[in-house]
Length: 482
Image (cartoon, rainbow, N blue to C red; front, side, top):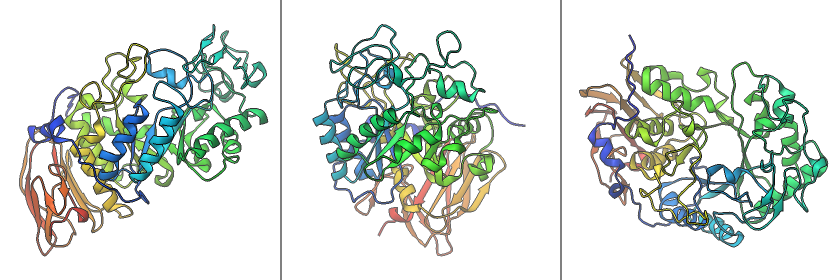
């Protein structure tokens, strides 16, 4: 019988909870190697450009993050809500997060720290204000009229539902030609619109950007996206936002020819398993659950949209269980993982910490900003992911319930105990070489030393340990002590 463990407000055992405190999560500045094959993305949602630059140097590079995803940089409507960044009024690189010069400086600084930059690009639509107004950088606009950029003929008018909004997601035409919550829907089949969108993306590429998250991709035919991408000045990483809907005619699989696709089922399924089912079910998590093929899948425990959907996913508010879910994501070889970094919010529309003019303030972690990407359990598991990249799963163990363990084929090993009681005195087969390893769930490995517990693997690849309730142990070759 499954036990209902609805614990959204319960912090895991003190040994994990203590690792979430501000005093434990600062990372010293350090030089980082070029990101190369490092696949973990940190989504610094709504951070301003100077703060992103600083974080690349102090934390993202040293901790091994390969990429940083930044929020939309183009000029947008005025307001203090988070979604104003998703209502463009021009393609000027000037927003409440900073100027063009600050953006360019941020990209260069991140590259120097070995971190590539992915831009959240809004290409499906423009703003949704019927009465128009003046954008952040002073550009005037009206609904369907953006002087010098777009005029009325550059938008879709689906002629349905009174206000042209999407109502029926089972109607392909409506989803891709009607308006998403009144947002002016660009005619992406038009050669002019395609050339204008490509010019925006190419401008970002000229500033050094390495890739794009294409917002609202589901609302554009995959062929339209392909035509826009075909105009890019150089290769770039692409991930598309296509939300799966059961029975809907538009599916994420349609878009895989253009690049990676967000797998929204991943976070919801993982939350359900951690909250109310059994971790043993995760043995074939990913493609075995009907998710996208691993090589084109972009996964996350939560993102800026899903964390605002009550009860659907785990978020920073879940504390210990959220850390464990991220640890599993970073240990499990499916998809390309993105770690969310949030700000604290109490209402769905709430924007980031800002001044009286709605300009985003510099990030101060744990003071209005959650900074989950710095939590040691999460940040240290980025190194685990890098050390085990390309290695398959071996030595799977589960107790039929909520205690699991597995190796990453000679490179790493993790065990997670999400039972309500400790697992004591058990031995685990790792397949790792004999030696002393830093437990990166509870300690940081640096300069050949470990700030936490040390796990000793014997000549046969085994170690014995006690694992408290709602806790874990993780070791890998790159955190092996001399």
